[in-house]
Amino acid sequence: MSKVKKVLLIIGIIALILECCGFLFFRYFTAPVGKSPDKKQQKKYTEITELFYEGTFHNEADIEGSEHKAAPKGEKIKPKEMLAAEKIEKLSHGTKGELKLSWLGHSSELVQMSDQNILIDPVLTKDGKSLQMNGTPRRFSDVPFDIENMPEIDVVCISHDHFDHLDYGTIIAIDSKVGEYIVPLGVDAILKGWGIGESRLHVLNWWESAEIGGIKYTLTPAQHYSGRSVLKRNSTLWGGFYLQDGSHSLYFTGDTGYYDVFGRIFETLGAPDIMLADSGEDSPSWSHMSPDEVLKAAEELHTSCLVPVHWGTYLYGSFPWYKPAADIASEAADSSVTVAFPLIGHIYTVDELSAQSEYWWESYN
Image (tube, rainbow, N blue to C red; front, side, top):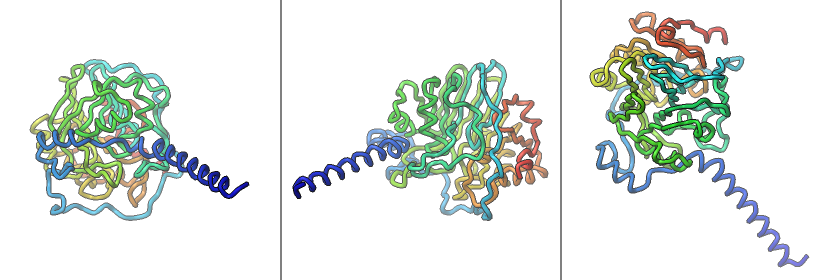
């Protein structure tokens, strides 16, 4: 073989390798990360909120000047075996006048309100993508749903764009069963990039609402941050959700640190039957709540039942997996707040949830 042919062969092999690398990059990295809001969208944000400037969204409070307890440090401990989940194999639509809840692990929930099936921050894949920057790690709790046989879902609510709340694999797998999506400003750009039609997206700023089938969905402020890449921080908004249908109400804090927002939510929207509260004791400490802050937030909101979430599925912090629940249970002993620790996957009525105080994690230690 001549030298020219050898050079051409080497060039061809290099080109093939680069093409394969490019395919893998766009298939497993770029697609899950998603697109960011374009300049036209960013210009719109500056017109509708003073908290979007210099190309990014900002929190209401001065987090740099505030005092927050540092996240606890200790030994990372996973459960000795996979946490069991009650399987949801058949699911009829909700019944008007009723409110039911199933915790799906971490911050994922199934809510049945009025006659709607609602998913909040569904992450139902068992493993994170290894090539996905800041992707979710391997679960240590089972998944209640068979993602390939998802029942009909009327509404999916996404609180923010972090991988443990917005999962590419889950959205692609369940989209054909989903009616509509409700998302904060900018998150629509990600979903549209994944092929979700704009007509199915309700995009909200803080305190804005969308009404679907008799349920009012309000995006509430939160103290957090966003970004699916180190190159794109805070280009999309974050928040919580307050759901009301005239008979019941439910408030999901989203990921948030403690600040004066909870009293304002109570004054504006009322006391919810159920409060799903970020309880991960995660870092940075200003963007998540410590156990005493969770109880304080619940008191200010006057909720009937507090459900700690953002734990029990992934190991993020440097402490045992059960610590957030155990710490809140200890704090609640001296509090008037009713705290429930639902079993993963079990569907509870409001009354059943309020009576669930079993410290089930102790059986895994």
